[in-house]
Length: 259
Image 1 (cartoon, rainbow, N blue to C red):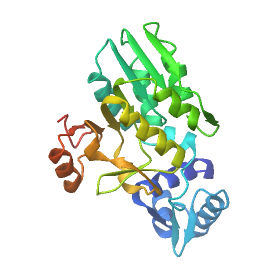
Image 2: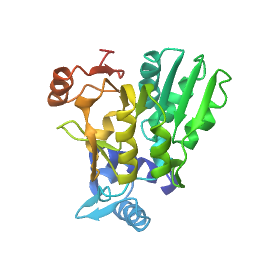
Image 3: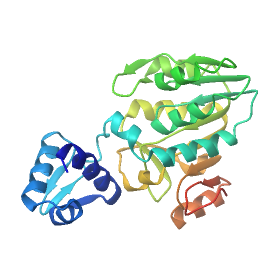
């Protein structure tokens, strides 16, 4: 097995488990310890992993992983989350979709919706929804984040403040067990708060991996949302928080059912 095949799988395992070990990877791939050490060194040199004794971990929680990697991570889970979310979005309404690969999956599922006004600060979402002739698309202005097609800044905020959305669909970079939504970009966090202030209902779409990640900027708390769509059962503390605040939970994966 070549390193071009091993490297993506090593990264997936690190994201899933938080850490990979030299011995564990050697057994998994059936290669020598020296081969795995070279793989981990190459990934560390590329900034994908950080070497630790006996293995490697994901880089510090102060920087997000690359956009293309995020798009491919948990793709099936994102598709099922998007399907559940879109089923809760009626026709004849206004919707905001923010930056994120899961919100992009939601946009792909909205191509059959009718009489929709969609506002977004995500160039990828706008491009996707442009294929729906019954959807008017408004792109919020702002500073383009070339890494993922997101728009942030004062112009984005000014656009959002012109509307009162029926539904906002938001993603996040990480979630902790206190129910806090976290992000890496303080400008994006400000945009998300403005979305909350200008929406009648807000849906969060986030897969289970967000509970394994860390990010430095607090956006808001789950208790402020109306619905949370995810792919696996949530930690008990988070379930209790949602129930206390009337947040609907939709679990779409094999270990859960829409709730």
